[in-house]
Image (cartoon, rainbow, N blue to C red; front, side, top):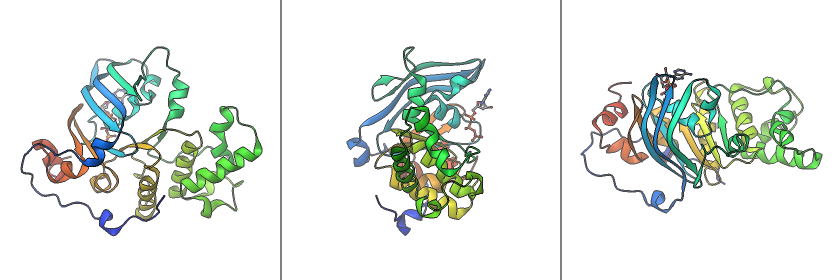
Length: 282
Ligand SMILES: Nc1ncnc2c1ncn2[C@@H]1O[C@H](COP(=O)(O)OP(=O)(O)OP(=O)(O)O)[C@@H](O)[C@H]1O
């Protein structure tokens, strides 16, 4: 795993006006296995039709960014991927979403197991009111792991994986609330890693963080994507451009365009995508 993100990668791509032509598939994308496939997904909050015929293929071991103006359905779609919307009364989904070819909305699907495989990091860091160590061990303990040596190993491995070990190794038994916001968010990522997910969903994970902490989280995404499939909702277009290989542009509940990130930002097919990435609305 590399900890270096080159300067070149930190520079947002030029937002040039597009010449409309069919997008060329990226070599990476073609080579990558499909991890999540959503087909004709419609989603309703009661009578409100929040997602309309969403079709998307999320490739394995890449970062997929979801962008679009406020209220367009990005977070709703993200939450369909680990059935977090099931927790909201009166919601309904039609169409299908598969993970590794298995329907995640199948009646027989173990939803707790699904949320272990598809972990989630939220907008505001939400450590539990306990020590750093116990935050990490919370999930493994629920899944029956009691062996101290195994737990110690998990704590070190995941804190290293979340680029936090060096900063906290001498205060593992101190409260997680004593950490800075950026450290708390990396702890939350380590906590997700501790239950060994395949997919990590991130809902605006940097929106409450300062630029330096944001940079650390972006570096971390680059490090993690070799091992995990990441889907991130972000309002920050430069961030989407820096961290992702694919980008989906949502508008009024529709997925207006989904393509390689470079295509979305420099040569989108859809006029409204172009207007949005050029900062003309949203
Ligand atoms: N629990 C809910 N009950 C009813 N409607 C909801 C609920 N959550 C979201 N919505 C509505 O669904 C639509 C999509 O919301 P969603 O949060 O997915 O958008 P978003 O693109 O993530 O927005 P933002 O960028 O502001 O977070 C909005 O019109 C919102 O008001």
